[in-house]
Length: 112
Image (cartoon, rainbow, N blue to C red; front, top):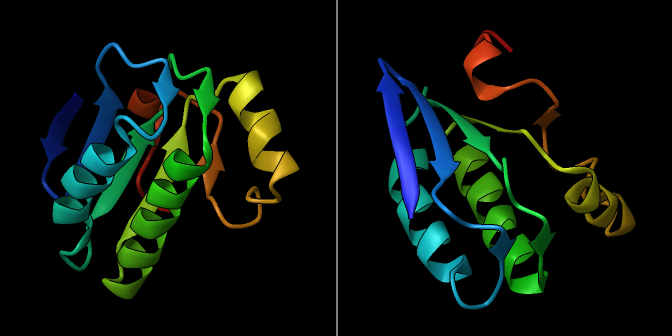
């Protein structure tokens, strides 16, 4: 489900063949990401390329990851957000909670 590419303490994470983050897969994504974000000093770059919809359980899972990463002093960034998903993020006023970088994950420099 998740593709993980690690370069030292920078994790580039993308979703494999997923266009919707919903109740069916949100817990699995949360569980897999939780194992990565609990180590202090890591940078996690989460690409949402291809995702066209997120339901409330999907947002709840991502919020849990954001909270856990902050508690562990990790940097959790989201990139490659589609216009449809970004509209949902704005509608739920989560654009002030999520750190979203519009650039492709491979072009992100982890010095934020």
